[in-house]
Amino acid sequence: MKVRANTAIGGSLMALVLGAAVTAAFWTPFDPLRVNLRARLQPPSSLYWLGTDEFGRDVLSRVMAGAATSVVVALLTVALAIAVGVMVGVVTGYLRGWTDRVIMAVNDALLAFPGILLALAVMIVVGANKFGLVLALGLAYIPSVARVVRGTVLSIREKEYIEASRVIGNSEVYSMLRHVLPNAVAPVAVLATSMFGWVLLAESALSFLGLGVPPPAPTWGNMLAASRPYMESAVWLGMAPGLCIALTLLGINLLGDSLRDRLDPRMAHG
Amino acid sequence: MLGYLARRLAMTVPTLLLVAIAVFTLVRLIPGDPVQVMLGDAAEPAQVAQMRAQLGLDQPIPLQFVHWLAKLLTGDFGHSITDNLAVLPLILERFQVSAIIVLVAVGLAACVAVPAGLVAAWRQNSALDLAVVGSATLLLSIPSFWLGLLLLLLFGLKLKWLPVIGYVPFSENFWQAMVFMVLPIATLTMIEIGVLTRMARAASIEVLRLEYVTHARAKGVPEWLVLGRHVLPNAFAPTWTLIGLVLGHLLGGIAVIETVFTLPGLGRLLVDSIFARDYPVVQGCLLFTAVIYVVVNLIVDLCYPLFDPRVTLA
Image (tube, rainbow over all chains, first blue to last red; front, side, top):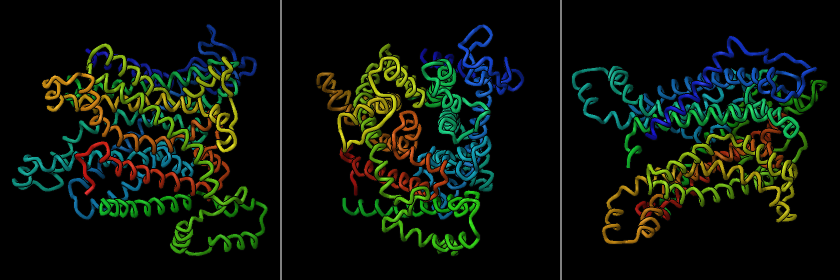
């Protein structure tokens, strides 16, 4: 019962966000970048559903465009981190020995940085833009993926069916791709789901600090940062992007929980 | 115990060395010439060359690294470009602010989260459990900087109970300093309650299923004693490990909280020096945070047997 409620609420929230993001790629009520100084700081109305900001730009349009940016950045980052992390994890976990020790030493040194700090450090080098952000956040999360995958692979490679595959003469690479990798999918799926949430939060935090996607392009993080001077006089400016981040994270957390319950039934029932 | 300590300490050496290499490389990858940034565009070539020699930037890269590392080991983190202050004292001063916020917040959060997680696990799948898990997930989903802004709006601007901007060092006036710390600490505490409650609940569920719990109940041990004596200590051990990670994570994420509440902490120092292109300070902050993270996890590992006597540090 609880699992189904999680899936339903989480799923609808994520559908809403993805829907807004996709719609924004083709259409927004107003141009999210169009400045209209005659309509500055308008409270929500029938024309501007979520009001306007200090430059008279429509908040609803900007929130939608922000969804598109956040979703694209988060998806690309997760894809990058999973692709590289899975490769590193499978290779080190399967080959072990010398390769494993060297790569894992570097991996653990990277893990010694809190993720967001590593991303921040990389942002200094690559500069504040969308692709720099994907690279920075991707690099920051590769080590944790590599760790999880390596752990899973280490336990899988001791299974009898891997030994059987080796005994009948399959090559190491074939066994790895055909038998080890598919069995690492479940833990990676759970990790990818929570990672989408972390990346989204990290991206908005960096944008909030002014180190993410630079204005005027709207992201939830930089909209929230820009709303600060008008916190009291124009409350809606901070509410819209803040609620968007919170509801998206809630959606992804609930979906992640239901995914975990399904893949790891031990936790679901006592 | 001493043997373990020595080995565990030795393990951190390669990690710290790699961290140092990473930070050193990173700063050298930044586009643009730091000397040009320091002196401005109008600088004479001779002046630039002199500054270069002075900073040792005319030497080969590996040699630069060795010199830099040797200086680090004596506690010399270099000098800030903007105001020529020594970097390490600057970092230590700012770190106090961040450390107080993070430590108090995690401590308070653990005091709420561990009992809440335990009770939720004890009545797993009841309405109470659903309420606890639901609120924890909700807290976990609110970005710290937005929650901070909301609290600031409510308690600072609407109710006017607490100051909106400002900071007084603890050494000057403890109570006044506390007033400025209430909201940042409350913000972080709420978020961390979300993280830790879920962890404590998961750990408690595992423990409640074990045979010695059934055994204790069968012996007629009162339920509160079963929970307090048998489940709580065992469920706390995995949560304790997570607290180490949370502390490190918070140190990384503290910059946003310090930005919201305009506090002069380590995170704000890092972000400000990034904007000012003050690379010695950036380098110092990154390195310092990584070292603290490693040290915190070391301490957490070493304390582990206190909470889980089955683990011996042999």
